[in-house]
Amino acid sequence: MAEEVGIRELRQNLSAYLRRVADGERFTVTQHNKPIAQLGPAPDVDEEYERVCAELGIVRGTGDVYDIPVIKFDDVPGGMTLMDALWEQRGYPLDEDNELR
Image 1 (cartoon, helix red, strand yellow):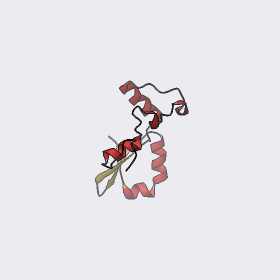
Image 2 (image 1 turned 60 degrees about the horizontal axis):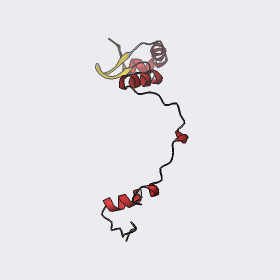
Image 3 (image 1 turned 90 degrees about the vertical axis):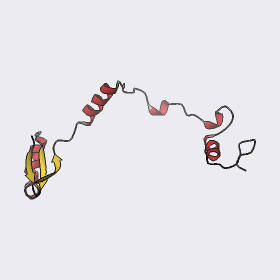
């Protein structure tokens, strides 16, 4: 279980507690003897990312996002653009050329 430390004690000796946290210790911060927060080492973001990817079976991408082809909605079969679809969904009238009337 994490050692408890009051707010006043933590504030007065913050540097010492942060050194201990950097060494891997965890603390429960209390106010009037009630736990209000946990103080501990920051999670290793890369390690957490890898754990979640492994858990979900996700493989890290290797390409460049700028190599993804751009989809032009004007080229969608039927000629309706994304904006036209939004106008239609919102109930604005379109003419036979899918233009806003």
